[in-house]
Length: 142
Image 1: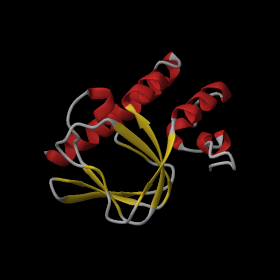
Image 2: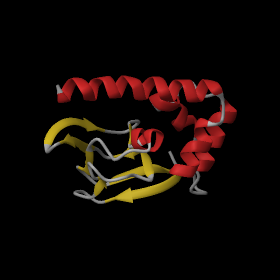
Image 3: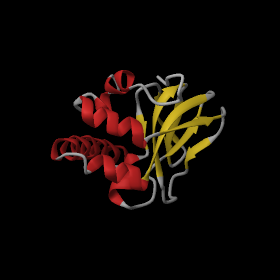
Image 4: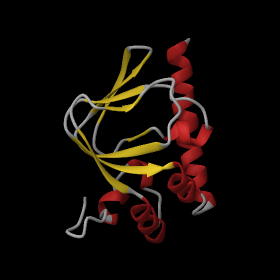
């Protein structure tokens, strides 16, 4: 996942569903934009209703996603969380709390935008995934 130099391994990143359609150049760019982040069990990665400036790809550990205090999902390695707030520029739709010690790759707002601007295919893939999540969230709130 992370090499001896602390850099994210592009081979591992390419296995993450969010990044699976990226070519080698785009993966290398994504790996350079991300930063290693650690979280302790019980740590709040995202707080529903607050504006966010980071999204994360889970490398190790797992987290619980809740909406309005209700369990929605448990997410683990390879999952991306928090990107919806960065794309839509609105408050977080869910809370994400570390269920165990975690290692994550974090992307700030600027870096995530750079990632989206890498290519039209990347932007299209991200927007397709976000639309799918939005529909699922709307169904939960109905």
